Image (cartoon, rainbow, N blue to C red; front, top):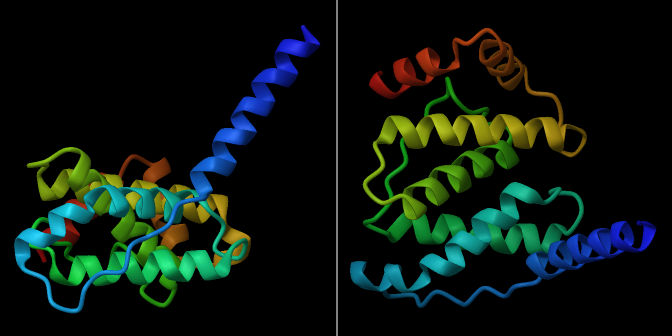
Length: 165
C-alpha cells in the first residue's frame, strides 16, 4: 500500500513539475487579427500557469506569462474583458492578472460563453487565487469583501451589477 501511495505522489509531483515548464513564443510586432488564434494553446498554458503558481515563487516566469497574456489580449479580437473596480483590486496586479487569466481561459475553452458566465468564473478563480497566495499578494479589502459576499451567496448579484454599470 505504501508503494502505491508513493507512486501516486511521485506521479502527481512529476506532472506538476512538467506543467510548470513550458516556453512561450515571441509575439511578432505586427499581427493580423487572424494571427492571434495560432497562440491560443500558448495562452491557455500561460493562464494555467498564472492561476496555479505563487507569484513570488518564479518571478521571471510569472512576469513573462503576464506580459505575454496582456500583449495577446491587447490585440486579439476573440476575447474582450471589461474590468470593473467593483470586481478586482486594480492596486494588486496579481489579482488583476488572475481575473484576466481566468476570463481568458473560460472564453477560449468554451467558445461563445456569455460575458456574465466568464465574469463569474473569473471572479471566483481570482478569489481562489487570493486565498491560495494571500501571503504573496498582500491583503485586499475589496477581495475580502467579495469573499464574504461569496460565502453569503451574493457574489453573482455583485458581478451582474458590475457588468451592467
